[in-house]
Image (cartoon, rainbow, N blue to C red; front, side, top):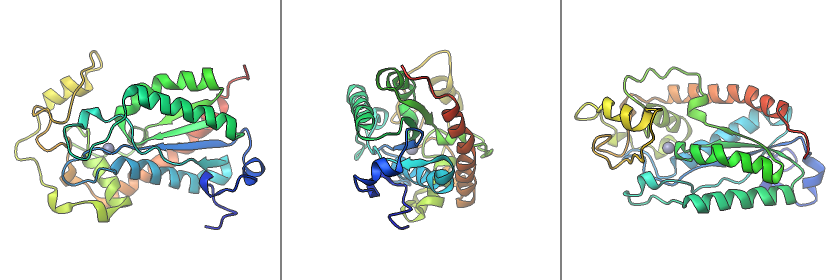
Length: 261
Ligand SMILES: [Zn+2]
């Protein structure tokens, strides 16, 4: 990739920014996490997923939709995993401050006003959903958040809840970074997962709990899902689906551009 064709913001020089970006450009911001993903996936799983998916979205759709990849935010909201060595987390206050600072400087330093956040960590969802109103109302940005594993239309045929480090996430890592997957550490769970506890603590839409991955009702390994059933082929299918679906998402983002306040 030559400098002239790169769509990574960091590859540009400062005089190139106003030449190549417009107010209609879409900035793509990967958000990862550094947190335990069981014994078989690395701490930076969500960083790799968010960053590489963004890279593929920009490579596929960048010229058509004028996409620009921002540097990855690698640490986010991971307190549910903070029992595990290596897990790093921001506070909610710190994360919101970081995101508002980013928004302030995006508006100062770049002509683009569309912001597609590619969120690699499900634990960020609630805060990001609310934060988007501030990104729009306080900074004039036109934001959306892509949640890759929920955007994918692939039926992963998981037979138990796939929450963390399970079939879909492990498959995507086998496709993106196979050298980082400890296949020897993947084994079917010794006892079947308590799907009722997972349904009650994680998926019940009528109540929210601060569920954690050191809760023995949910997992004995830190991971929740069928990592042993993962495959690189499934991972490639999920990635292809996310990239394909992103075209419609980003077109919708441009369509919903709000009038200037
Ligand atoms: Zn993850």
